[in-house]
Image 1: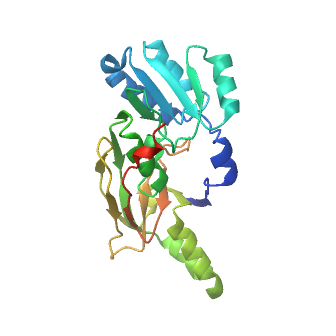
Image 2: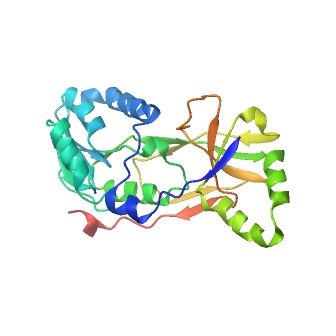
Length: 249
């Protein structure tokens, strides 16, 4: 069991994109979605958001899909041109939807949780520009008790507790653990429809537990007995503003 603080919402990430490792779990899930919808997608214009260097778009192209890869980083567009010439790279901001596409494929959907406000707000914006893929997202809230975390909190100086609690409520603190290492837990699965306007997401900790978060679909661990929990002790109660048609260009 270990804790990490992973704040990816930084200036470099936003301005240049995030050159993540190509996590096999995410790539295989996205391939499965494409294959399930293959008959509907062949010959259609599909834009992959954010498409990075175009790996997934290239796979879609091999199946007869007219694929475009949108990313904010112009370097990724050059890599795409050099390695995947059948894919059309587009340098642009995912927060500004583009017209002219039949489907919008969100590559990061599988790795998103209700904590990720920007993801859901962006999906709302693009819904008027085309059909959304994946058309659903599976989320798994978990409330739990953990004596190891309790021991950690008990060793923290009193004047540092506010900062530590803030980390645990930020959504950037991640816990890698095995379920059997938790003293007690309660979890369930909920399916979110990405085809329709997302108005409100609310998930709260069961008061009989000390900790709360969301089990991530991607573990980022070679040991698959581990799960990765994004901690959000104060829960999620987020409303999303309505789509602004002026954003589509």
